[in-house]
Image 1 (tube, rainbow, N blue to C red):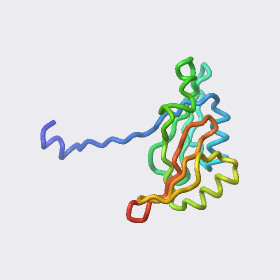
Image 2: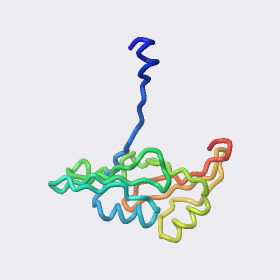
Image 3: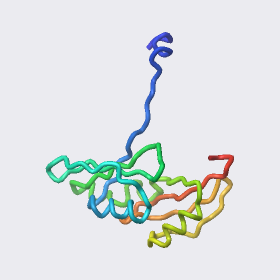
Length: 143
């Protein structure tokens, strides 16, 4: 691409969805919408037992999560452990304690007590399948 082409048609890309392999669409939708207050953006039947299910945190304009039902043994083994035991996703919030309290009251499983780090306040939690997440509020300077 020439400099002239770059100026007239700059590259514009984004990550639209991150696939999260789940055992059951409906159970995952219920967990994320009821316990984490996510929005169900789309639930389209694709036939053959497949669905296109997108969820997102409230008021988010970033990347969505695509719930993908495990369809073979390898995928089934990855449910809840897509990152080999590490935190997979980071849920950033503007009010850590509000969301922590709400999630606690919904029975979300936390792996530790909340902690204050140089960058902000954070706690690790698990979804219904054991996938690890960070709930994170960055310091104002980092937001």
